[in-house]
Length: 280
Image (cartoon, rainbow, N blue to C red):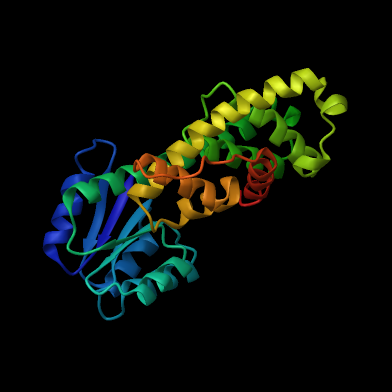
């Protein structure tokens, strides 16, 4: 995975480079203390994750991100800074920056952030590669239309992100979401008996499996939200898939605080996952 570091602080650049290159799969393909040089480099380099400081000159890191997006250069972004006020953080998240880190940087925090975003990018890259291979397959004409395939692939990436892609109920989740995508219907409109050949008893068994998987998913998501409370992706998943108050209750329980038991709504989860699939 290719990283680029744009930070005027040589100590920060050294810390990031050291932690990134501890993995043989990661490379720092460029470093600079100048926003204008970073802009020129990103036009030429393939970068998966870019680390940007708000303290750059001649313009700051948030403006650099805007300019890169204008020319369709869109790596994942981690932004750092010494003067990250709430207003600056809000401006960063409005630019769809993935993670905001306050300085001074802590090595253990940086390590976990790199693992989190690196794992997410690696997962999405692998899914994209699988999709390209599927298109090249002689049997590709038997597969769903490309737009539907992309949506299902994105659903799989969400399940992997939640850590439930291998759970027992994950196949049931995929089967139901695939039907929703193919028929373009929400969860309440599914005819389980007609389209999935499920009796009422079958449906109860399947829903129990799914609930067990979603319990694992909300636990994993709550853990990530505790570790990275300002991460926009995590907050969106908390709201769209589980309703934030349920994730918040799970976070309180993990902190050994008194909290009501989280209530997982299958309809909210499936409708949220269906809407998420449109982002493919």
